[in-house]
Image 1: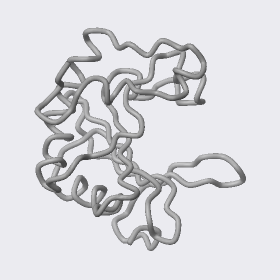
Image 2: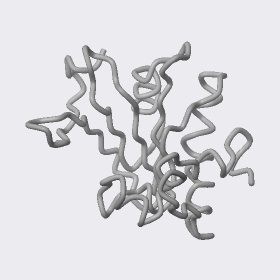
Image 3: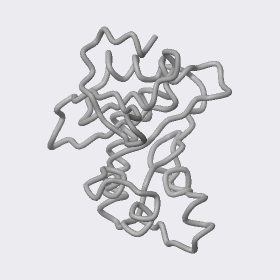
Length: 159
């Protein structure tokens, strides 16, 4: 099922963790509708701007899968409102994707995930048309735990 011109439902429900552990990862009709909006408002503009395939490392997570991977109980992934983009191995960097979203799109939340020497490990973006707060965070590990700090725009963590 096509969510948009360049995004298929199979791309947002694919999960190796679900496969390995026999966990169903099928979204509800409401969650699919949420993904269609996210595809139109976020994914397609990114795809059209960079003119290349955009790699989703995590999309939908059923409640059981989210629990299994240690996700937040309020994760937008569980409602069809979030994707993680990882462009490693392509000509487009995760930093470029992050900066394009930050500077050009509306979103609920944008997370610069685990920067290493200024390079992002991946980019999380959530879209909820009822809550476009444009919150920007940086995820880092502190004493083995993930913490989220507000992005102020001049962090040396991100090139």
